[in-house]
Amino acid sequence: MAAPGRHVCLGFTDEPYPAGTHICYLYNSDDERRQILPLYARQALLGHEAFNYVADVPSRADLPRALEELDLAAAVRDRPGQAEAAITAEGYFPMGRFDPDDMLARLREAYVEGQARGLAGARFAGEMTWALRGIPGADRILECESRINELIKEAPMTIMCQYDLNRFDGGLIYDVLNVHPVVIVGGHLLRNPFYQNYG
Image 1 (spheres, rainbow, N blue to C red):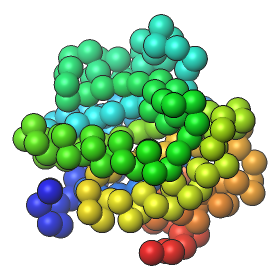
Image 2 (cartoon, helix red, strand yellow):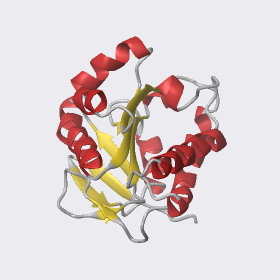
Image 3 (tube, rainbow, N blue to C red):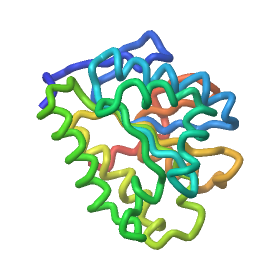
Image 4 (spheres, rainbow, N blue to C red):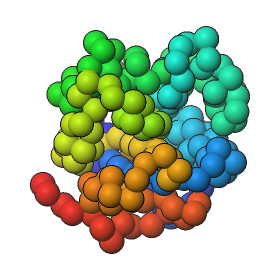
């Protein structure tokens, strides 16, 4: 386990945050994400943490281009084993169906594996637009998001869930905000006043 009370630099803010932080990133454009994601990844690597990125692209053949467009390619290329990337089919629904139990188990396993390899922690960032495509089990996304808040108490990893404001409707965004204690909006990191602690 990580040291109790360990804080990390997120890269795009001067304020340190607990290693177990669940972030909702509401964005309008890839230009906006290019201001945040490379810094987030860089600080993970500098802090000797694992960095895992999940891109919503159709195939692994599309992954290098997606990483390049977000300025993440060098991080993944230069730190194999410490920095990894996957496509959403691998990261969220490898069996063809999204299952929160499976997702949480894989997150926990990735954290434990990193600890076993001597890494200080783990940091994840994933694109959520796949949830709009009718993937079986996608209706359980809010359940999973809520349960992540419990998982990070025992496995203090930093998780950033990215929601495109041009794609998700206001009702779902409100529900998503209810289960994330921290939010990035307009490039600013804020403690989320809409967060409901169901734990």
